[in-house]
Length: 156
Figure 1 (cartoon, helix red, strand yellow):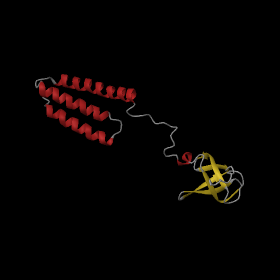
Figure 2: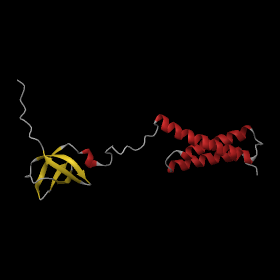
Figure 3: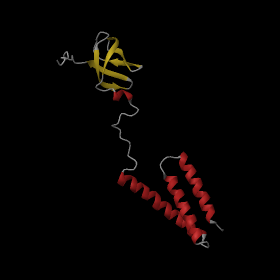
Figure 4: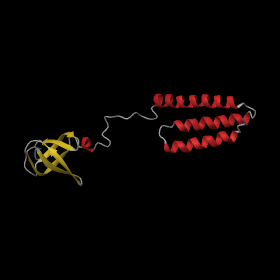
């Protein structure tokens, strides 16, 4: 079995293309390992195929584990922080005030947030009342009457 260095480089290119469609950078580092194995074979052309596979496996292990270590050590890819409200729009509205579009009767009503109407739950209140978002249950906002704000004094 005679493997040529450019076989390894073609394999490296294939692994990098696979990385485009797969998350996690594992195939990228395996591609780097295949490229380095091809470079080793280019420098030592009569290297046995067993040593080529062993060098690819060793380099693959070193590059992938090195990436994982660097990722954890230097925070290159942060773990998902479940406390962030990304893609949880309701949680982004906590503490904000809105005006009721319709009366809150029987514990349910609606508010307008930007160009969207959100269902709300809370104590019975008339339409037009300012409410504060105090919680989120799925896509329903829990609201309470907003505290009355004192009239602002104009500076003279």
